Image 1 (cartoon, helix red, strand yellow):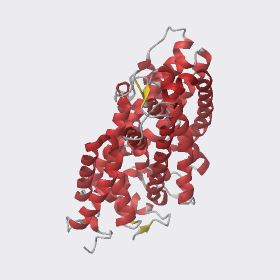
Image 2: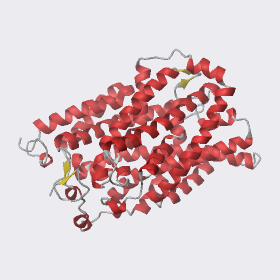
Image 3: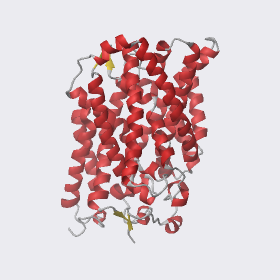
Image 4: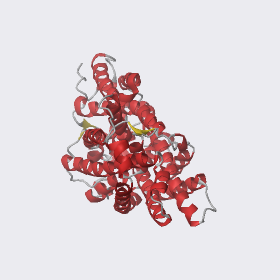
Length: 466
């Protein structure tokens, strides 16, 4: 039986009988879904208003000079957000209609064994981001404790570990915890950041105008490289869009789901990028937390802002950086969900996030984004071509859960296309994501059509007769 994308039918009874599949990886039915459109929108606002995105804005300022001025920055941001929202809406559809997670979706193109590599390429960056966000949050928590203790305590690493343990406990509750954390955090954090924006605008407008607004900037490679960093920053999230849409209540049209991505990303990203660039321009420091402490020279306000930075870190990690790698670990090791959550948190502790951002520059973060996006661009391209072009939005969900079924082993066409796309992307790392998307997509279609004539992965595609 073929399950069509237009229906919400799952194959739960058959999947229940398969071995080694944890409950968290089985298709979500209508009754399992508890996230409505408003909490879903707030979830993405909470995800977007984070210190990682603010640091991305700060990365525009290198050695006191902005590589893009304010107009170039927002032009790049709007272009990137439009592309991000489009890919989100396209790639979330299979997960939304059938309830399967990203790690199972990968089997459709890469096969059961091939999906191991492609799932790791999504899981590893998420773990590093998890650690990086927690390090920034630990920095903010340290500012709070330092003020409260009158300077007697000053240890970022200890605060980092404590915050990580708190997040591990919260994440044990899955999307039930995410829903209420995001709804609360998104509103409060936005209010806090609007206050910071007003302080920067009134007290530091002259230096910000000189170093960022009126900077010469560039409409050339730095402009397009920033778009690629922007896309790379979200590439891992919209690649695993099904992990989120499978929790969203049914009955929401594709257009409305697209709006649920575009509007919060525009609001959240626009504000955080702006504040990040303004902070770096005003202070010359790329770490937003340390820059906050200089700009807001009031211990009580610093505590207030730092507290909501900590909340923001928890919010973004629970959405973007905990669930996807947890699913990967669950699938690969057969661990239960809660055990995998704990392992994910411990791995993030060992990711050395302080290496990515120094006080003087956030270029390490930007380079990290560009490097991993060279792999994620090809993967999302292969998934979308498989689903929309080769399979015409039709897939047998039950087959995806069969370890020895039609998708057993690995699809050589997908693996080769991934390598070709990533290889091409590394030839111009500043444009890695878009190069990977185009090259891998073309390579995958040609490989599926002209090579491996007896491949079982052609069954059910437009090339089956060939």
